[in-house]
Image 1 (cartoon, rainbow, N blue to C red):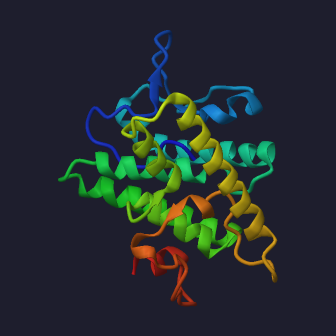
Image 2 (tube, helix red, strand yellow):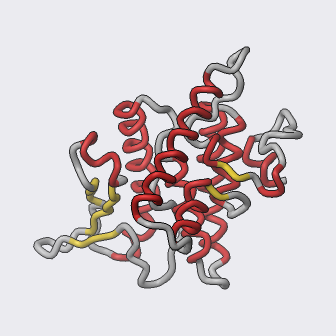
Length: 222
């Protein structure tokens, strides 16, 4: 889901807001814009039941993870897509990792542990190929096609009408890829929305060479 996960340093108030009336800290998580109408809300606010900032900083991550999981399930139910919004979530994890100060080793470890736990959950629910794609996007080893498309169009000099036509064509291509993966003989891997948006590093298959008997996140990090 959007926004990430773990980490923190003194004064860090990500996802936190304090009620002036009584001084209690709350965690706040934005609902992704494309799904706000379907879910009927723009953000989720939840009390951490403490007035102490340091305590709130340590409590927020489990609350954020819980809220994001709830929002993800709601998004999936509303859209009918089991992997809806995973690309946006992976990109936000990437930004979180990039924003961690160089010396904040504990913070980076917590972010990576949270990513690993989510990747394992995705692998068990949606299959290893989708989980691998999420992991590669989150760790900067691959980019969604749509991200590259935005960069290209921003510097293309094309007219607004042409840019719109290009985006429409790419969206139709993604839908076609999604239908093709679902109708693949034997069922195929569950790739959903993520599959066609993926640009694997080096052009290699994202699911090649997986070993059994270990957590999925351990295999992709090996």
